[in-house]
Image (cartoon, rainbow, N blue to C red):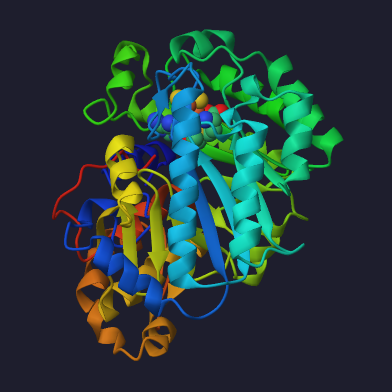
Length: 451
Ligand SMILES: C[S@@+](CC[C@H](N)C(=O)[O-])C[C@H]1O[C@@H](n2cnc3c(N)ncnc32)[C@H](O)[C@@H]1O
Ligand code: SF4
């Protein structure tokens, strides 16, 4: 097979739309069978080990054209203040049910959590300290929009214990920034980096996106050069997910300016190679970390995990989601809060959990979730050892292995004595290989392309 043939057939393969597997079963397979009562039972059964806390803040100053997150624009603070009040009631309600537990990881996501006032941050973190055990080892991370930071805010975040921040950078090219409705000069990002480092928050991560309108191989190379010059500890490189049927703001993206699938693959490879050449270790399908960073260490020790926030070093089996649309995971199953903020508020103020849908996990779900997580994290999995850990016969995978035959034939995947390994094009093929172990694939849900 020539290099060109290979590129073309690989391109055809990864044009398949497959989930990103931040959970298994994936969110389209959650159902209304899991509501507030089931969530309470899930929490009662989540008795072992530390827990993680996720706080969703679904507010932004304005909505970027490309955004796929659950958020809305709010120029006024009153709705955010009202939201925080309800959030505090939800935290108290969950804490009363789950009891005093050690917290391994706190994550603020959104939306733009840095829009919260100092009083709101202090009140919520005060609640966390009142209800849970939070110590010096607790990782405390936040997603930040660099356009709304400033020295005072950076110091405030450090004072409440934040020790890791990820900044929404996306792309530094001015033409791309116009096309995606997010004007953010490199100086703005550089200032945010300096403010965070000066405040003592030195573990920084950048979010970048490839596949955006107006992006070219040379522009994305320049974006990576500018990004690595600021020396973040981690970089996430997401493929732009264009889902206008789901996120109407994306209708503002001029689709004639979007790269085609061949160009997308070139953009991904250029960005991937430029980041790796700058000394970062590629992690899974879309992350990079400096070799000394905890995530690179977790990869080499095979302790890396994947959850709703993507790759993580957090090993807690229970993740509690607070806020509208947040998703929690317990060993017994997943639970997602209702997305609409007024609906979420009404349920909480009436003293009920706001769970709208979710999924109780069967033994087979847990086994397949383990297999899929290993493929996404390490590009390999020992099916026999994994099945043994779940007290199952690896013969359960016989059909799935058959589906891998074309990839094995192409020399990209090996299957050897129950061990599946992606030996070429790992970042590009991992979602596809993982999907062969997804018992629900094709039973609903609409996803973005693999690269
Ligand atoms: C909640 S935002 C980050 C924080 C902050 N709101 C910001 O944008 O600066 C999380 C990240 O998701 C990524 N993202 C958002 N929409 C996306 C899309 N449609 N496709 C791929 N990545 C997307 C962006 O990289 C963004 O930084
Ligand atoms: S990308 Fe970030 S700032 Fe832009 S709309 Fe989405 S959540 Fe808000």
